[in-house]
Length: 302
Image (tube, rainbow, N blue to C red):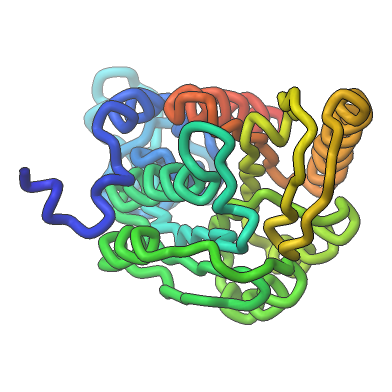
């Protein structure tokens, strides 16, 4: 009952969070902190959280020598501590008209909210600052990162409506001025634009030194085009009605969507941007588990 009083609480499914919360150990390997809720920074500073010992080398601060360990081992070791990064996590959520599409199950916008809410929840548990921007063909709402903004972020997700056409370039270029301080940026969209245009729109955010994570949310019908009967299809961005005979287009369509995904995968990989396709028919916890596991493996080799 208590959780129902929290704005946007329906986006934080406890069953999902229990599964994701078990990924704490994966987060220990991630550079500059991550958003799985219990990350540890890879840099060492003067916080109170002890990390490990290492051998003393000339120039080390003698005040950091562990004299008790020296008494037992007759060797000099210094204490290292884990610095609390208190990272800025900003969720950029596409609320353009195409995000309201749902062939079955939940709309892409709702699924994107679930993803963003889980990551925001896990980040605020680590005392990271959480913020959010919603956009379509312009910035709609802007919530600066703050340790106190988690509930505001959830409330904004609750109120989000996919009503206007989208355009990545205009809002993302405006957003760049809000991210002068390096942080983690999570971009959630269905990316209804050409790969080159998408990469060009995202480029300013990445080149500011941010850790950019991209979630490509698609409905199963957009992936498989599993329609049988001839009918009129509506472009949700423009409202245009298009008569279609599915049998004559299914192979071509599937080839096009796979080529689109493959192109984005290649381009994002070249720029070291994490890219994950999310199918709204897949359980959210499975999607997040697969993503976080893959990210942990990637961070080992970066």
